Structure formats: structure tokens, C-alpha cells
Length: 317
Length: 297
Image (tube, rainbow over all chains, first blue to last red; front, side, top):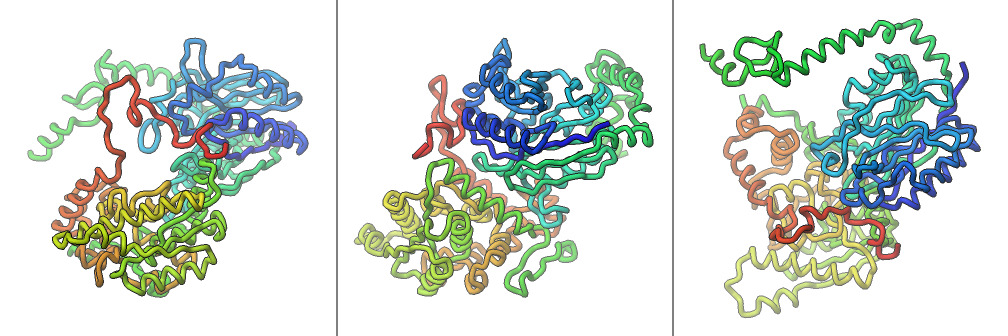
């Protein structure tokens, strides 16, 4: 198999300035092409900025938007992942990442998991996607797209890999926080993300590409630190924190084959077993059938856990 | 027993200040974030210049250093605003910051404004006078922001914001605040890292509203202890009984809990009576800066 040159566009989008961000994407696509890149990855909402609130509807684009077509036209002989607010025909707004290749949109992933806790308020403004699919690409290898929080849910990388993705691409707008000096890299967010990405790369024996933005939206500073992780879980490249830049990384796709033959975890996955047990858990959590693994007296959906009142009773005995 | 449970508090930077272990931050990362934040705020608003009230204390000294790093000292105006009872040391320390940075500065004596207002009001309390001084300083800084063409940078830290040790529409007024998420102990750690003069880091924090006033004597606490308590209470979400088992005095836990709850209103935009279909801050939610909102876009 061939080597693949990945360009990570670790940019600082301007909040709400769609035209300016489109122009920046075009510039960087040209720059990446000149650098011989095969795949160019831009961060989550790179075309719009992250903290949009009510601006989301004003910068939203339909998939047939001529501005997207013009951007796609810049990808002749290239693959790129770009992210924007997508408006569906029924006027729902999604945080989407699109694979564009040879002038066309080849695949769209709508962010499935919308964090609405802590400093996040995504579910207020956006609809969640409900499809997780790998996509074939001109690169000769299946791609699995995910957006930021999608990677904080185990099922996503696993489903993508089972569906044929050999390269998992996560595009993010991850706000840096937790500056405690005890962290490995001085930033709690970065430590957590790195743990996740190395684990996913190893467990799915896939190449993981992470592109995180930099810059500031309101109070939030995004930390960058984009990475490429080998299927062995070993980091091949780590971009600096907070610096804007276009970083190219060469990877050998044969590493995926070697890893999967040496460590056939994916071959040994048991999706049919998972599906069967999940179907049971879903039915039991919904109260549609008796919870077969619960202790006597616990409520449907709580599975083996005691009710708190019952635990107190048990403790007082 | 309680003392044994307390976390280690190291003397940082050769004994310059006390730094509880759990509050230690990576100052390189923090500096990078804050400098980027200051640049981002100005850029989004279409401004290149900034100004701040420089008291001679550690908070405004740190913000001055960070702002000068972000935009260059020539684009930062330091406004010194002593009252006639202010400590001469404060002014000296503020001038040391100005000299160290090489930034432009302006001296405005607020005594005539304050004394003019309170003439014949001998019954005005120290709190009234202190609040009025803080608000006069706010008015002077905001007036200067027009002539200077810059944004007002806030200098309130997380500790005073949480316990409400600020004057509403006074020292808390600003366009943006780079250090509002740093506890006082962390302000000291940052100040040492960016080169704020030692004398300023070492001296007892004071609002300097009357002679001899210090934060810690007025509030009957020490900053490292208060910072640790707030960290476990606010950031780590510990309940009062859990805080006591961490070694904090129950009376202090209760007192600080009340101060934090009592100051909630100071940290929020005043509520608007909801009447129309779309109301600012409730269901009309936009970023502060967006296309069309910058001064020069």
C-alpha cells in the first residue's frame, strides 16, 4: 500500500465570518496541494467558528449551497474534510463534517453526540445526527468521520472501524481547560484527549487523525494539539498547542495491514453478540421486559444497582 | 487530626508566597492562553489598544504585564488614580510597573471628585466612601478609554469575584477580564512567572480604601486557605460536610458558603422582566462580537 500525506489545518476560524473562513480554507487547500498532501483536514466548524448561538441559523448552508460547491471545486486530485453548520431540507441545523474529493461532496457526517453540560450548550442550537457510517474514498482506504464529542462515546470509533474505516478522522473545537500543573502536558483537556485517541487507535487498529482548532471565541481558548496516531497507538505527530499552522505528516498505510494481521482485534470483534445484548439492555431499560440481571426490587433501567432508599435500608440492618 | 488532613502548602519561588499544591498551574500554558485571549478580545472588537486602572497591587500589575505582552507596551495605557489617603507605597509600586513595562501612563487624583461629593456628608460610612472611590476610578478609566481608543481590561481575580469582595460597577467594570479565573494564589504564581516586581508579590493585598486596610485582616482569612476552600467548594463541587472532612473549619466553610451565595448577583447580568417574544440574554443569544459588531470591521 501507498504512503499518505496528511495535512492538518490547525486554524483559528473567525466567529460568524463565513466568507472569510471560506477564503482561508481555499488558501490552505492550495497550500496543502503545493505541499503534496493527499488528505487535508480542517477542524470542527472551521467554516463558521464554534460559539455561534443564534448565529448558527445565519451561517447555515444546505448541501447544495453554491459556496460549498465552489470549495469542493478546489479539491481536484485531493481529499479534504471540512466542517460547517448544515441545514437539512426540513430546516434542522447540524454540526457536519463533509468529505469532499475531486470536486464533489462524497460523504457527510452529522455530529451525533451534542454536549450540553458544563461549558457546552450544543443541543439547544443543533439537532443530533443519527447515522454513523464509514465512507469509501479516493485514497483507496475507508474513512470514518467523527466530530469532537463523538469520540467521547466508545461506540463511535468501534462502529466506524467495523463498517470498514481504516482511517478515523476526528475534527474538533475542543476548549482548553484545567490548567493544573500535575497534568502530563499542563492541560487537563489535552491529557484526556490523548489518552482517548491512543486507546481508540490501538483498539480499532486504525490510523487516527485528530484536527483541533486554535484561537479564541468569547471566553474560550481552543488548544490545537492536532495529532496523527499509528494503529499501534503510537503518536506519529503532535502539533503544538495554540499555534495556527498547516502541518503535513506522512503515514504508511501498510502499517494498518501489519497491525491488523499482528493484532487481529477487529477480526475477533463480536458485533452480533453486542447487538443481541444491546437489544436486551434497551428493552429492559425501557421497561419493555423484565430486567434479567437486576437485584430484586430495583427499578427498570437501573440494572444491578440498588435504589438509594433500599441501600440505606440494607445498611441499617 | 484536621491538620493532618490538610494538603501540603509549599512555599513557592524561594519563599516569595504560599502556594497550595492543588492550586499550582502550568504558568507557561496559562500565559499563552491569557495573552491569546487578550489579543482575541481586542481583535474581535476592532481595537488595537487597551487600558487599565493600575493600583500598585498584584492583580493590576499582573494584568498590565500580560496585556503589554499581548499588544506591546506602547498600546497599553496605565491609569493611576490615588485618593489622598492612598498609601504612597501603592503609587510607588504602580510607577515601578510602568517603568518596568515602558508603557504610557496617566495620573488622575480622584480626591477632588470624591471629597466634592461627600462635602457636608460626614455621616457617610467607610463602605460608602470606598464604593464611591471605586466607581469614580471606573468613570475615569472609561472616560480615558474614549480618548485613548482602547478597551478597558479587568483586573478582578477569582477569589474576590467568588466572595464578592468587589464594588459593583466599580472595580469589576471592564470590557474583558484575563485573570478572573485565577485564584489569588495563582495570581501570585503567574506574577512571579511573568516578572512582576517581588515587592508587589510580597506585600499584603489591600483595597487601599483607607490607611492600613488589608484584605486578609478585614476578611479574617488567609488567601491560601480561602483559595483552597473555594477550589474544593466550587471547582471540585464538595458539599459542606465533605469540606469539613477535608480539614476546613466548619465555621469558615459556612461563612464562605454564605459569602459566595450572597455575591451571586454581582457575577450576573441584571435580569430583564420577560415580556416580548425575544429577550436579550434569555432567548436572544448572540456572541458579544460577530460580523458587523467590530468598531472597524
